[in-house]
Image (cartoon, each protein chain N blue to C red):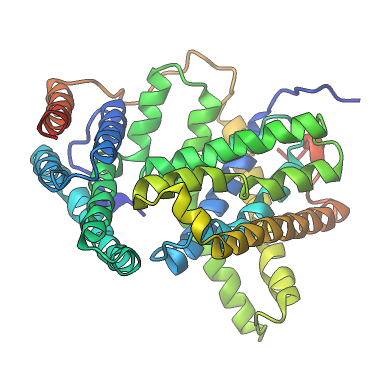
Length: 191
Length: 227
């Protein structure tokens, strides 16, 4: 039985950093498609499946408490150079997702914990986005409540696509684990 | 990726970060006033005077276009020109406030963090993330070329093809790259516990950085007083 908090090794940080680069790249591909829209939650919805997929792969390999926060921090840093809001959005969402996972599952030992944490990561960025969109667009919470249908659809879409992406990520990781390429807890001795 | 925005003489990274945050927060607090436009202009001139003109120009043009588009949309929905100017002002501010951060090379930022006793693993991770975005982009291109060569046809109603032909090879490459990189780092003696590591070309706080910070603070105080 492994403890709650395990020490991170160098290769854990490197793996999470390379995955964070992949996540940033995925964001760079999807963001231009929805950059010019003001519809609440659409950007989160588009980014959700790919972010969740890479998060799930990362957590299937590095099943250590804090892995999602580290991944969130690394993926947020390139965004800080462009917008501090996106940086805080990513970091806060990662911390919240990890906190919820710790409350419900205590550690990443079960596949369900990985699926939950990776799936809930992007939906948890919605509240931060709400605050930001009210700040940037000057719209109040009442405006959102007055016409809630599109926002409800995009929020539900973010949750569904987030969990679909996480499921796909777990599936890819499970396949690679079966092939002996991706071993959890750093069991592989090649680095 | 962001190299074209880098300044010839970059600012002290922490000053850049704090000035970006200050300009953004103060600007957003007073964004309903039309005084936001002179504030943005003053910031843009100040930043350009300190050699950040590439970042200012790039960010202002990009966010200006975005602001015009979202401004028109908000003008149509709200039915007043005020909302157009408010949205345009906020978007321009977002772009111009990002200029100090855009102009700082990632290596300078990590050196600064290292000097501030930030854990080596974190600075390494940040550097790897930024450095490997173009590497992964070329990997993605190679995988796409391989898919074309093999005649793999992708369509939204065939997600299994993308899964099998794109995501599995990409994940394999991510694993291989991270394994090779970890091995390379360990061979070169890099250890995350090594607290006494030397910093190559340490970043120094100069008078220029102090003047930049004072200028940004003065512009922000000026906005607060005038509004």
